Length: 555
Picture 1: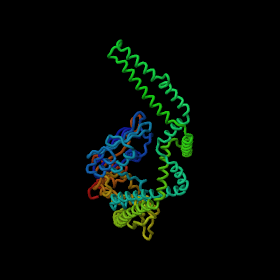
Picture 2 (picture 1 turned 120 degrees about the vertical axis):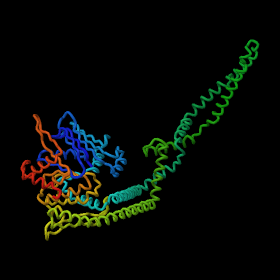
Picture 3 (picture 1 turned 45 degrees about the vertical axis):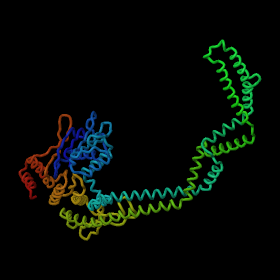
Picture 4 (picture 1 turned 180 degrees about the vertical axis):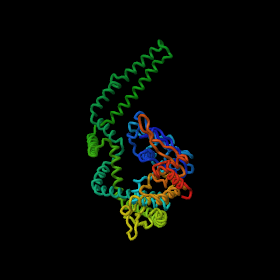
């Protein structure tokens, strides 16, 4: 339930702190005192749009903070843990801050969260029902939500939505596959032509082009290369060449041995150099023998490289590796076409199975809704007729919809007649504003304990009624407050008298400005407030007597 509300620097509010209690909390005050300002502030922690014009002083931010007791609220705990929102097993603190520049920040348990997450958390903690929300009753989606709440369809809806999304994904995959296959078949002939060209090339690997280009360059310059080899060999083994000169040097060194340091072994070192040069000469001779100019080989290499270059240009790539990848892609595309019947049949089977499961879960919802619809209609008549609608008739129709959706395969419609011999018709065309208000209060009273909400706020939902009807509406709010916390803003003394706690909103003027204040009334102050609401005079003896009568337990 809502335990405390802190509002600072918002509209006419400098700073107020309110402690709320279990049961029925009543808020009263003259028109314009600031009750709507409080609700506007509360709407901000429910994700409402921020308006910088509401920031009272431009030198500091507006802050709205609410503390809720969430002990035992398992669904909220699961939601917070699933969304990485800090969780406290006792309290949940939601806060909204609005800077003078218009920047808005949201917090849950002092951790910053996106505004959507703040709205989801606070939406699980409090429901604000105001006069304009009475029009929700005319909307099919709200009517569906009421019946689903009545039927306890939360888990069933979650399961159906999961199945429906699985069906949608399967249907989407089938559609994409069919379109891809259709495009592939349109291009099949050209795809096969491209693949045949690549297959005819018999590419050997990513390195083939480099090897061919190196071999081509060698064959193109073979005359120059062989001349260089010949000159190298002449220098090494000619007459005289390096080998002959090394032989002479080795012989001369042996003759000069007596004059040389024996440890230097100069003759042996010269002989080693001669052997190394001889090995180099043999390698050059072998290379020279392998270099035979073959015009046919060069022509074949040039032709293959030309074909590779042509295909690279056609497909806008510049490597053999890219051509190989393209070849494999084209092959897979044709394999898909060749195996398309099997693939499409498998996808169709998956889509049919997913649809069957979704229809099955939708049928479960339908059965639960039809059972709940009659129970809801009976309870609504029982609760609404004492509110001045004794001729009320109600029919809740659950009919098949034209298509399957996330909510199942139903349409729900509420039809009412408020007078004798009046035909049943949709509520929007049959009810006055006051009648819709009483219907909505009756609906909330039916589903309150099924909503799993700790708190509900009624903002002048009793507008347009008076006398005994007002008294009964107050009793209904008191009845709702037995299962959850109710905060009711009202102008009716009959309703205000039913509260277990009473607050008054008022304006206070100082030398420079007007301020909104709120205070919890003492028992005597409460009598005076009710007398004021009854007669306009808080000190009128007759009005105070009437106020005491309203406050008596049997009223």
